[in-house]
Length: 277
Ligand code: ATR
Image (tube, rainbow, N blue to C red; front, side, top):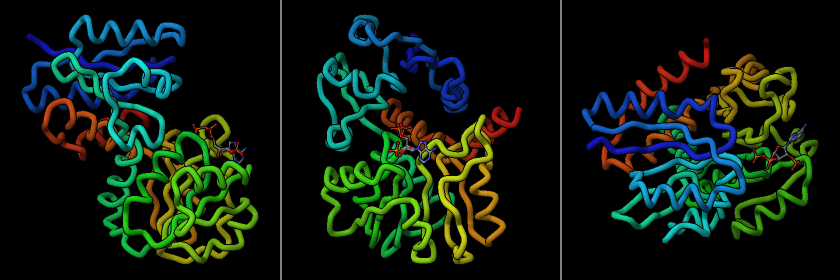
């Protein structure tokens, strides 16, 4: 019998996940289908009960339900518990277990796509919202030397550092202060929505003083190249867009569901081609 997988969120119409997962199932000869499930806020509990009752093999969870699903699960892994958000649920013979592959997916995409070892690196994270949280906690478990956080609202950066117990390795700055320190970093990561369609003219941080060869990474994938990445490139940086994180969080979920690692290069090509349309 064909296994059923899917995405729970609201809205879900523009998701690229069915494209990646259904192609990977087909390529690997796994009899399974990935569907979109548009679920309203007040029906999250019923949706999870439905996953259980219908024997759905696994789901991804997206905005705005990543926190709301937690009370309905049987177990949640340590990383997902620490960050307080789940993006992947695995149905293990009726036990629903929550994971979060966003941060680990980001870090793996960074290491593999940019061919960089994070040991001893000085990293600046821009933003302190939901997107930053998983990435920050995942970076804390690498051997990076510094993981500083800059945010428009500096208190939120401070809170994030404290909640990750990153005090020894992380300073927090205003955006203006971070701009003065651009040359100190090996890797800079934008996790804010600044520069995302339709406000493509905005940038999270000026890059004056950037050292050539610095890695500049943006989790935005619409547009594929933000204004910030364009400027970084013009200043001699090595740049990475948000397709890597999107694909690797999906690949890590796929691996949890099936035990198999999909062809991430192919997933990236499919997603990029779709985004170019
Ligand atoms: P997400 O869950 O997608 O990260 P979020 O929790 O609303 O969304 O966080 C958005 C991030 O983008 C925050 O760091 C936010 O800064 P504040 O904490 O000061 O709100 C940042 N952000 C959004 N719009 C911004 C803007 N115009 N300039 C600077 N930072 C911005």
